[in-house]
Structure formats: C-alpha cells, structure tokens
Image (cartoon, rainbow, N blue to C red):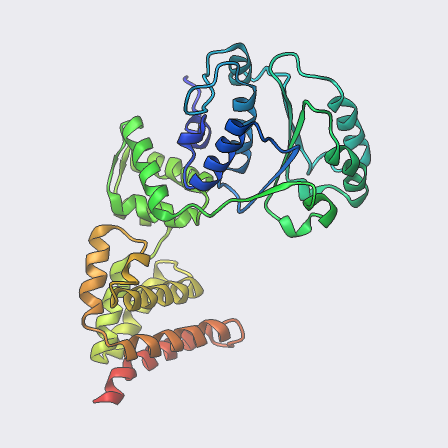
Length: 367
C-alpha cells in the first residue's frame, strides 16, 4: 500500500516564494541575505501553524546554498541543498526545547556550536518552542547567543514570546508572524485541491479556512479529513456535516423570523439545532458573528472584512439591506449579554430561548 503523506508535509513550502501570508518577513530575510547582513540570532514568534519553523528551514537552506538563484532562492541542486532535502545535512540542527529544556541540553549545544560546517558557510541551530527552556538554561545560553562563532546562526521559534526573558530578546532580531488570512488560505487550498485532483466548491474551502483560524497547518489537516469523508468531492454540505458546523441558512432563517417577530418559529429552529447535537454556546457565538457580518455588509468600506464565499456574501448583502443599523446593533448587544451570562444560568436552554424572544421583540417595539 502506498504511504500516505499528509498535506501539511507534502505541500510544505520549500522556498521563500511559496510561503503563504508572510510576504513582508520573507522579503526582509531575502534582503538580509542579499546585503550579507545576517544577524547572529533571530526570534520567530507568532501563532501556531503560520510558518515559523518552515521559514527557519528555508532561511537556513538558502544561506548555505552554493549556487543561489538571482531571486535569492536556494537552487535545490547543489550538494548543500541536496543534503538538506535528503535530511542528512550537518549544517542545520533542530532542537526541541520542550524536551531538551535543561542546562545539560544547552551545554551540549554550546559544545556543538564550536564545530565549523563541513559544506557551506553557516551552521544553523533552530530551537523550537524556545519559551520552554528553564531560567537556568536561558542563562547558560546567553553568552553563546550574544557572541557565537562566526559560522553559527541561531533561529529561535516560539508561540509565547512573553515567556522569554528580556536578556534573550535583546540579543535577537524579532520577526512577528501574522495569522494567515482566510483569503490566502483558500487560494492555497485551491492549489492543493487541483494538484490532488479533488473536486471542490469554493464555499466549502472557505469553511475549512475559517475553521483553521489563521493556522495553515490546521486548515490542511481539516482539508485531509474532509477529502477522506467526501471521497475527493468537497462540497459545502459535506464540509458542514463532517465538521459539525452550523449552516448559514439557519441564521438567515432566524433573522427573517426576528424581523417579523415570529418567536414561535425561532424556538422551533433552536429546538431543531439542539436535536442535531449542536452546542448552545456555539450557536450563540455563531449568531453573534452573523449579526456582525450583516452590520459590516451595510457599508462598502467595511464589507471587505467579510470572510465568506462569494455566494454567501451576496446573501449577506441582500439580507443586510433589509436590516436597519439600529436593529443589528441592538441584536449584537442582546446576543453578547447572553453569551456573557450563559455559563451562570441555571436553565441554559431557557436562557437562550429568552434571548431569541428578545430579538423578536426589537422590531415590534419600533412599530
């Protein structure tokens, strides 16, 4: 049986131009290589799954490439690049600080740093989850980090920059990675779907990108899961079924009922959602996002903040035209108050039903 490779590994970027959503950082790193102004230590920080370790590996491969391209990308053909691709490079060392967080681990690293590279100019040490190092290990690391040998470059990666002591931060060039935008994630998922011969609906990919919450690795893991579920045909309905996501249509139906003051139907819809196994607090959060989306659709200046597929965006714009700003703002306030007090409620179902009744009464009070 053929070995399956998850998309997060199979389509991991191998050069700067293929990195998604971090253009300013990759340009800065390429300019540093061009000008030969490499720092002795870098700190890559940001949310999970946005490309910190990937960029560290690309940077390490590129500065050791024997024949870089005019665009300052690694050639992937020289001995240094081939050793990196074959995972046999002695120039690039990765250390997981979560499992090597003691002073002894750092001392071994310091001893290793003294050895010059066999091929290429630099020995690069990538330390992942560096915030997990103990205070004693940080202190042991300080002198080497400040004055390493000329051939040594350190790249520290972390999701929790605030846990790193200031003396370490002051010795590093700090790069803050951004959460990857939904639009960028959708484009990359489209590219992978076409490469894998997977049929898809753009609205389905939008749901996957939103569930990824700014992390490309999470989005690709969800993509693999949905591909298996949908048998290489990713549709909107299959995605919401597999991921247990509330269909937008429920929120549109409820909004119509709120505007008409039809509280009986809203209670029936809520009962239907509970019967399908949806969590009440998940429903409240989704309803809050729905009203927020309707509100931003009313102004062309904010409509670009809407992160949904084109077909659903048109539905939002049509419905937003029927809702007054006052209704949407008051609805947001009601839903937010319910969300804040939900956990303290003794009867949580009744608590949500009262919210629905209040939402139905907003337009009635005006008439």
